[in-house]
Image (cartoon, rainbow, N blue to C red):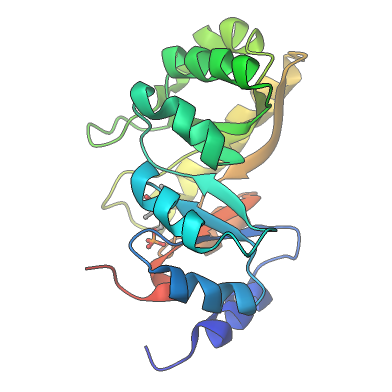
Length: 222
Ligand SMILES: *Cc1c(COP(=O)(O)O)cnc(C)c1O
């Protein structure tokens, strides 16, 4: 890429509505490059490994107004660390994990914001609820009162064309509407975390409120 990070941020920001939150996915990106994105105005960063995030956060502790988003598969033995390090967890992908996070949040006296990761299409390579599993788990999720359940997160299976990706995003939007219409007191469905470098415009078209962009900002990961 010949453009600078700051130029790329400007271009992307101009191409999506101001209400859409741009999360810079900084996995495998060194702290110094995160600083560059910060200087260009980014305040939301996404990481998928607890240990890597912990060391970069330590290097960046002089930047106090960053919001950190966990976007990877979370093992339950790292759940406590995740709540300590991240304000948002986008990838809550099963009821047991949600309940564990809820318990830990109570013990720590915090109320992390989370999204429920859903698989609209079967995908052996990803974790997450199927639609029917998620609908069945809503009563139990509604009991997780120490979590601020804000909405849904999805990643389309690899290899779909644009129409296929758009359909996944549209169905995620519809699912959020359906859950919202059930009026669970502790389940908000205001946020849709969907869209990565290759498909974020489709995701925004379908109502995404948070796009998670790595490659298009920082270049190819090795
Ligand atoms: C790596 C990753 C991203 C960013 O992907 P890019 O294609 O590099 O934009 C977004 N979401 C999740 C969950 C990821 O793991």
